[in-house]
Amino acid sequence: MEFNVKKLASDAGVFFSRAMQFTEEKLGQAEKTELDAHFENLLARADCTKNWTEKILRQTEVLLQPNPSARVEEFLYEKLDRKVPSRVTNGELLAQYMTEAANDFGPGTPYGKTLIKVGETQRRLGAAEREFIHSASINFLTPLRNFLEGDWRTISKERRILQNRRLDLDACKARLKKAKAAEAKAAAVPDFQETRPRNYVLSASASALWSDEVEKAEHELRLTQTEFDRQAEVTRLLLEGISSTHVNHLRCLHEFVESQTNYYAQCYQFMLDLQKQLGRFSGTFVGNAESASPAAATSPPAVAAATLPAVPTIPVVPTIVGVPNTVAEGVLNPNEVKPPASGTRRARVLYDYEAADSTELALLADEMITVYSLPGMDPDWLIGERGNQKGKVPVTYLELLS
Image (cartoon, rainbow, N blue to C red; front, side, top):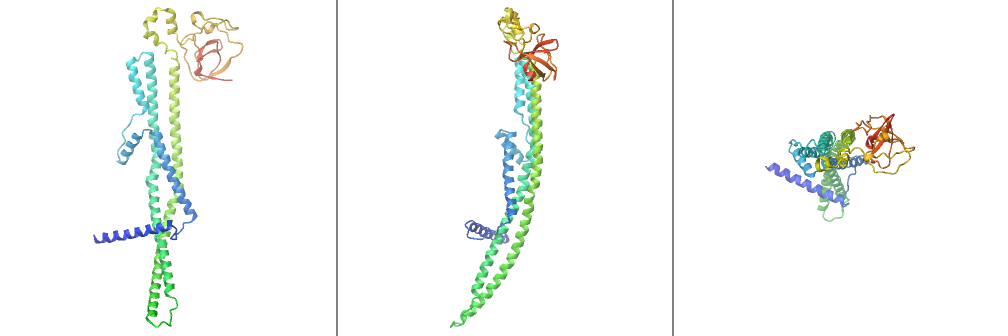
């Protein structure tokens, strides 16, 4: 117990002495041992790496998990060394709601069928998001976090030790400077005319004492200088390791970009597939009017318009040269339409399309067809020609060429 108290008192004295010296340095009242320019550059580079790594880490966490409450929960689980429970993504939750709604509305209805298809795509998007978050967390966030909690803590610890060694070195330099000044003052030529020879004896004794103090201060300075140089070398090696950290973080960044690229490519492909599935049912949205309003079946013209929504209807227009007025009963017959003298374009088919009826033209991916529009047509459709075949085609399935 006595040893601990003495050590505590000694450590407290050293702490206050260093604090006073550090304050005097800040006020310009004490000399400071300066580090070389290369060492200062290494320190600045390490601080810059630490600061930007923290910012990139925090913002990446926000990107992967925008919900702050969820981030706090994951942080607590991580600190408690417990496995983070699996969490449903927003896409998967939306897919669940859409599936349940389709079951309530009727999975056989057009709206129910569409909800099921969109819900399945949302489920696949949510699963892709979960995989991306997991991959980014392992390949990118974990290395950054390991640097901040491992390497950087070691560097900070060694830098604090170096700072203490420098303060001890400066204190020894100041002590040696004071001892030499006192020795020089005591070694001044005494006044032999002094009536009391006792003063001469005291002066000679003081000079000898200060000489011993100077030797002791020089010995302590050599030891402190050795410890400072050794600690400076250790710290320098750790700071030079920042270059290896940059190389490691660069590799992790490439893996993060690759994971993000794969994630967005999957999302794009999922949406393309969904667009293909919904494109062939582009006119079924009006079809609900037939089942929802049975009374509409009493009017034959209205039923015809409802059961053939994919066939654009146009109003009766005056006869145009090259375009006969064939809007009998409001239905366009592409086989009776002649292409205009000008305004035709070539188009490349993006993906396969199945014709819903005889008025439409089936398409194959990457084939070339001729397309043109007619007055009063639905802007989402064009007339397509391939050899002797002719029919309506959806614009979203085409890439128009010049």
